[in-house]
Length: 197
Image 1 (spheres, rainbow, N blue to C red):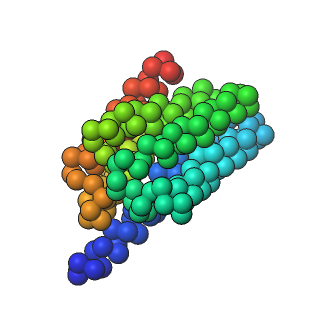
Image 2: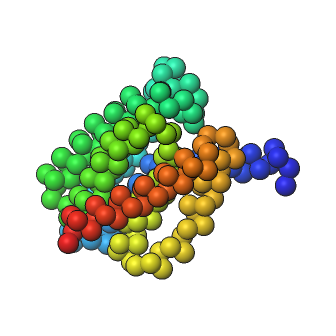
């Protein structure tokens, strides 16, 4: 494969697996699996679609178009803090709505992970620009491992592909990808274990 083709392939993988997409997929699964009433399923899917997917992407596009984030990969770690803070506000709004709608505990716990993990990323970002893409794959991977067991780790090739794509696009180093993947997985798994014991 030529270098140009590899770059295009990396861009496709990186775009397909932006964190909000896996967020939405995870909550659709939780809605269909753990919610007993159709109206609650709909509430959860609508909240995840609007606050976990659409507004997360729209806020980033806004920052990019206003020049507050200089490139689509947010390579400058100093430009990441404000978008992360906005993400936390959006997640908190979603969390409150999920509590009001009385969705399942696992859905509430997993949503809370997005708040706490984004806050954690803000703190770490001062020293290391960890890969949110890798974290965005490993967090849901931890959720599915928690629910379905370790056969879910058969999905690890997705994490490796996303990590490779971020390195290939010169967005992150191996350390930043590894740290993001490890932090996302461990943090989500531990939080779910605590909240749902």
